[in-house]
Length: 132
Image 1 (cartoon, helix red, strand yellow):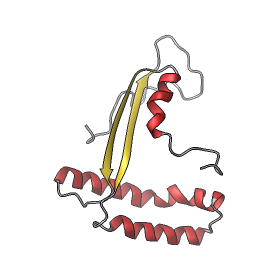
Image 2: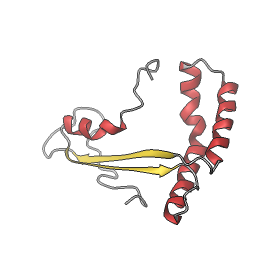
Image 3: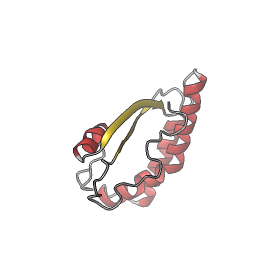
Image 4: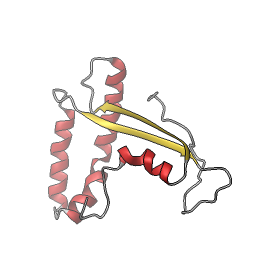
């Protein structure tokens, strides 16, 4: 993340950052989701299946630019690594979790947006289905 000039570990600080930016009623919801279908509990097994599907379909999007631009890997090396990661993600003997952070708040009434994109209302206050 240093080479890219962007931190990739900020999710635990999102609520504090939103409050510092002036958002009101900031709410943080955290969870940990299994990364495949290993749990016995049907609810968490389904969450694990969806988490795996998201990771599996987005793996190249999460890795190609970072690995080729900042780690110096070739496209072929990165894709070979993605294939290994896919195999590991499918292994139900590995009981891994993905930390989840959902943070939302509202812009104070009467305030103007300081940056482009602030103050959007699409999806305001909503929590993705199935995570309550």
